[in-house]
Length: 270
Length: 280
Image (cartoon, rainbow over all chains, first blue to last red; front, side, top):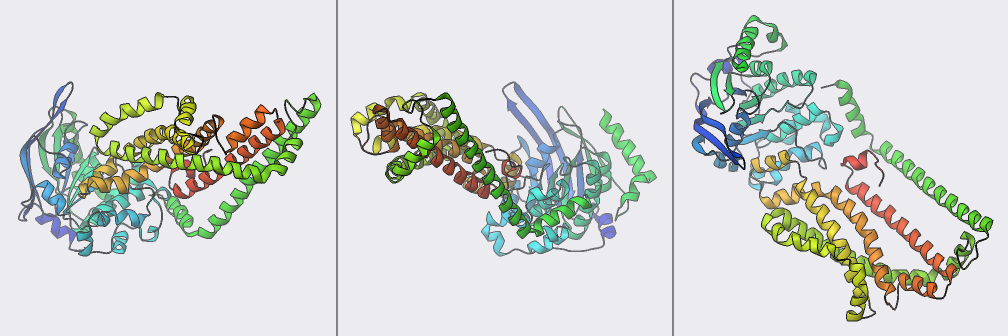
């Protein structure tokens, strides 16, 4: 699973000449509630390239989680289409070509770390037969090799979330969907997890769609940031982040970083 | 990620034998506390009866009761085994139907909507009150007791199991869906485990309820059973015999509770209620 390439070279080519991975075409979603219907998402269109790291940022209620769930095949759009390498979300889901990481780790507390990571295989024996990477490799990748037999309650919040990331990586999916995965972590752990995720991403070469509320998180992680606005949920702007890779903590004090942060803050203030 | 947290988790994982010894020590400590409490209670009972000079036919002393229990222990054990059989079979039937019903209701809302009101209706009937009717219909055998025990254990198990099955982490459910798990897999691998803390709480209650049901059934007519012993000794104003039977029932009840608690601790090692050592 570890297709280790030069991360810097990768970032330059990310959205210029590589193939399309996810094509989102005029996707809208209405929720019918008892009090009337709510337009959660209006005509969202964007194309995400292979190996690209894209963040969705916006205030609560801007439809970013809704969009992620539609891409993940967990809910159906009211109108519009999504294509994932030419397939529908539910086809991609069946092909195990997506890994989902949620805001809370959502681990099964009665299972060990290994039991949790291997859970998807128990739910799909066909995929287990042709697995590409061992559990040990994945544990190594997320830095939990010595905690294989621990139970979730013995781990810190950050470590639990790394187990959730490992669990999403087990099928070696080409697409990772992450819904505020660090939202429940404290600020210090969260800072560290950013770079941890970048390391995992640069080693595993996934396409990542990442929902966040945090401006620094979006800038540090992304090739592109999709800024969304609420009521109705719409894509307001898509910003290229042309910071060099690999990135580390120092980047957060650079002049370019501050410029991106100012720009995003202004966009989000409206 | 704090290094200290990592290290402490690491030692917890490594220290298996140490944990076992500590666990055994704690169990001994708990048992000593329990025995000490019991002895204190018996002494208090003895002293109170002697100081107040209460007549034996009203309230026999602890020593008299224990003496009588020693004489009768084998016949009482035999009688209580009938009560146990009725309560046990009733408990298995009642909680079994409750669990199956809960799984079906949690799986399909339609089943819940059509059957749950019926279950609530069943709950409203005071089954202990219809014990004489069951005895008239069915006779002095075990069945009336089994039916009462089953009927009164059914509802708490059903309600708790439904609550537990519904209490599964919604994000974990979404994760199962995101990897294409079926409804049955979500039930067997996620909802069932999530429901166990609720189910054990209900079963602990149901164990006691089933005994109450069986004994109440025996009051209204039985060939055997500790309920029959209590009823007969009451008629004869044989208070020593009656207190001996009640004392024995209490001892059995305590033993049962200890056993169910031990099973619960083994099965729910991962749950907060067990790890925090909450009272059970």
